[in-house]
Length: 107
View 1: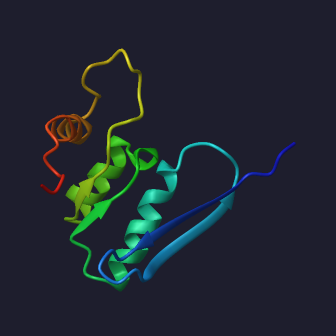
View 2 (view 1 turned 90 degrees about the horizontal axis):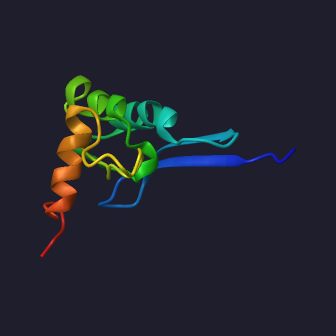
View 3 (view 1 turned 180 degrees about the vertical axis):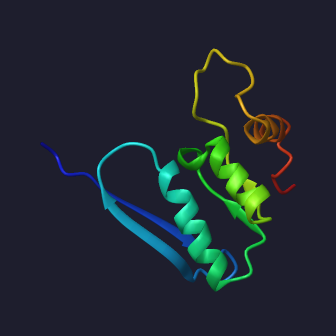
């Protein structure tokens, strides 16, 4: 049986300092690691926004960031069934609409 190693990092974009890291074995979603990485980063720095890839894009993670910690989350809603036009959940729908109109891209 293969032993998959996963590493997640939270990095300050302005200075590239690693604020938190998590290493574990196993395959599957990155989403369960999000809350620990964000919380550990939030304790070390003034986190105002978090940008993550679609592997972290669960509704629960948006709620942790936005509602529990007051941090803006920008995570593409790439996980889910492709037949569904808008993903379930308030924040994932919000992300789908923002990404569709390219609201977070610099001009």
